[in-house]
Image 1 (cartoon, rainbow, N blue to C red):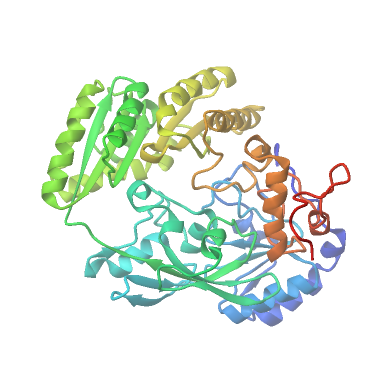
Image 2 (image 1 turned 60 degrees about the vertical axis):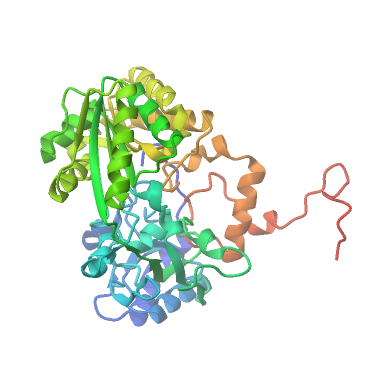
Length: 498
């Protein structure tokens, strides 16, 4: 695995493999345990396919009790566990460990309850993102977060990575749309957080768990909020002669107080790839393309569309095309949703990056990426959530050419460093995983990282849940628990000690 170091496998655990498999087969009988190398190949990687590793064994539980017993056994026997949903993670968050159990939650695939009165749906974590909308759309409702992989990605994985999507600008990421969780801790203890009520007293544990990347517990049930479908939704394609013009238009739209349902941006390589793949009617001559969607009452949508057209023309837009039907609106979005597979047709391999920046820095960062493209000798296609500054540069390379994967990794690291440099963050919705793990020091101090690890220790003091992810240097919980004494003095000496 190029450029990524993972924890050294435990020889003691590897030597006990047969006993571990037998114990798991007692907990999950039948076909719930997979231990043949050929059958485990399907689990050796996630969406970050540059890195692969066979797990020790794969287990597919069907009940909460089985999940609890598996985790309790692994806790008592010091066996690592990697939780996995649909495997669409783009940061290596579900990459297996050679000495770890891969815990697949995809048999938890039922919609348990639809409560229209409370506008809530209770589902198991293996239900797909789009499956929630499909379950409620006949009654005029939908689930707002919509990552590009929504047809396949699981809601449990969305919780782990705090996924967003094209409509997160107005309706929020996963954390803004989750009401409650049932989770199993590493010790096998089953806990509930939140519920159908909007808020609960005390610490916001729900927000802590959302985006925790499988490091704190295993989700076994999710309660999400659903929204009523808007009266009207229309999208507009806006082509620009430069990415800088497009970026300036984004900032001006938000600055005018307009919050679209979605606002996506693509550069010329991505426009051509998507148009060749979907034939959505994108302007091929444009250097950058904005897709802006307005939703709500028809009069409001018409008014805001006219204002956006004015702002676009003030930023040198040379193509403006408004959807005239629901079918045309969906076609506009089909090209954007298919951008990742479309780019796969023009390059043998690509790395999909994920960083977030202040909107006003879009022109500067796009110019910086062009310079980095020349520096590393690799092409890049840009597709991103322009409204909230969440960038998804696709770095094109050929893994069969010596040195190109390493060059792509270096290019991606430079892009993320640039995001942090302009006041942004390392990730918007893909998570840290292994991809950004060794860049955490660019954004956080050593004290920051230790404090984050203290939270990890509170839930998993043995570091058995998804180890090797997120933290570049892992400290033992005993070390983190010590009081730091500097020059013979405790911090905050005025606080009473008990």
